[in-house]
Length: 427
Image (cartoon, rainbow, N blue to C red; front, side):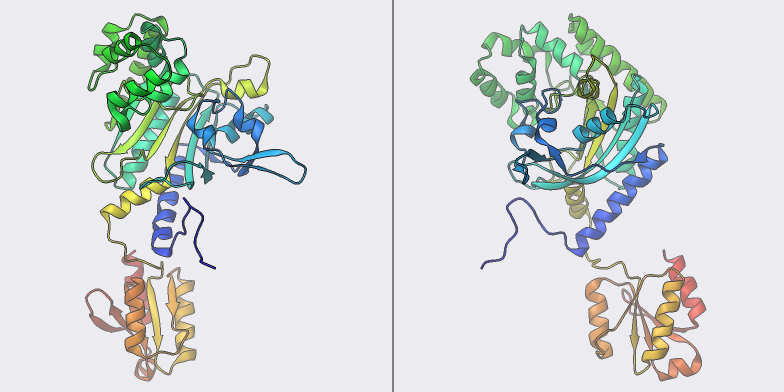
C-alpha cells in the first residue's frame, strides 16, 4: 500500500501550523476589535441548501465544484463550499436575532476544483459578515477589516472594489439579458485576459457587438469618475453612487489600500452590490487572499415571504495568505517552545525548574530521551528553539542555571528569577 493524501488536500506540518495559528489569532483579534462575535456552523449541509438558486446559483463554479454525498437515510448532502450559505441558513432559522448581527466564523470549506499554488480542495476560510444593515458604512467597515488584517500580518496588498449594480448597468447598456452567465466569464478577466473572456462569451452565445460594448466600458485603469460619465443605466448609476459612498467612508477611516476596479466581477450569483477582492501587490501568489461583497437577497429568500435581509461580508483564504507569508519569511520554527531544558544528571532538579518556567507562562520543552548535551543542543537548534537551559550539579549547588542563546551561542550563569525576566522581556 502506497501512503498518500487525497488529491488536493495536504497535511499541515508544525512549521506551517504555527504560521496558520498566528494568522487565525491575528484575524480573530481584528474581528473582535471591530465588534464582531464568533459563530460555528456544520461542515455538512443539505444539498438543497447549497444548490438554492439564490445561494451559489446553478451556473456557479462553486456549485460545480461541490463535494456531494448521501447519508444512510439516502438524503442528499454536500460539504460546504463557503461559510456564507451556512450563515444565511442560520440567520433564516433564527429570526429573533438582534440586528445588526455582526459575526465571524473560521473553519474548513471544500471545493472539488483545479489545483495550483495557493489553491487546494480543502481549505480554511475566515469570514466576517454584518447582517441587517443597508448602510454603505457596513461595506466600508468590512473592507477596513481586510486592510487592518493584512497590515497586522505585514502583507502589502491591494483591495480591488467594484459594485454588481454597476456591472449589471454595463451589461444592460451592452444589450445583455443573461447577466449572470456574462459575469461568471468576466470574473476570469485577470486570468484569461480580454481574448479569453471574449472566446468564452462567444461560446456561450453572446454576440460580438455585445462583447465589444462590454469592453468599451470595462477598461483597465478607468476611474470611478470616468465610468460615471459613461453610465446611462439607472441600476448602473445606483452602483456608482454606492461606490462613491463606500470610498468616502474609507477615506474617513484612513484606508488607502482599496482601489476601484471596474473589471472585478466575483463569480458567485448571490452578490447584489459592493464586491471586493484582495491581492498581493508583488509575489508568486496570484490567487486572491480575501474577497467578499454585499449579498442582500439570500437570507430573505431562505426565509420566504419576499423578505429582504441586507448583508455584507468578507472572507480570508488562509492557504494563499500562508503561502504569501512563507514566500516572505524563512521557516525555521517547528515548535512554540521558548526554551529547551537539558539536565546533566540532575533530572529531579531540572523537572522542578521546567515546571516553574511553565507556571510563569514560558513555553518550555525538556529532554525526554536522556541524550548528551551536544545532541540536545542540535535537537533544540533543529526545532528553532531560541534558548537552552543547561543544568548540571555545579549549577544546582550554586542555585543557578546556564542560559544559552541558540542564535549567538552566548552563555550566562543566572538565577532562575533573572532567566524568567529575560525570557519574558524577549517576548
